[in-house]
Length: 94
Image (spheres, rainbow, N blue to C red):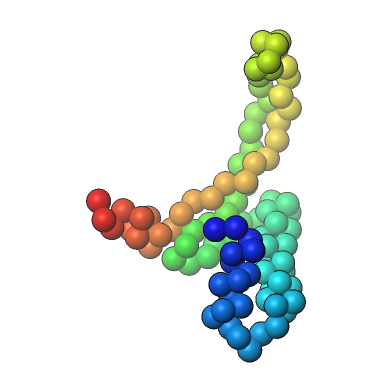
């Protein structure tokens, strides 16, 4: 699902809200997640999962085009751990 599909689905399920109100709500939701992660925090959505960041060490990588060694600096990367309920739903039909 892409952002526009999410906005459309929310608009269909909440006809009392204007499209610009729905867009503001979605923007606020994603901005709050991004801001909390940037501060080094963790976001937990019960039944869905948890967002956090992980630290990656500096390393030597390779430029795929030239094969030349390239230094890759240390960095934080986003990490998502799915909750129990979502894992169970994904594996329900196996």
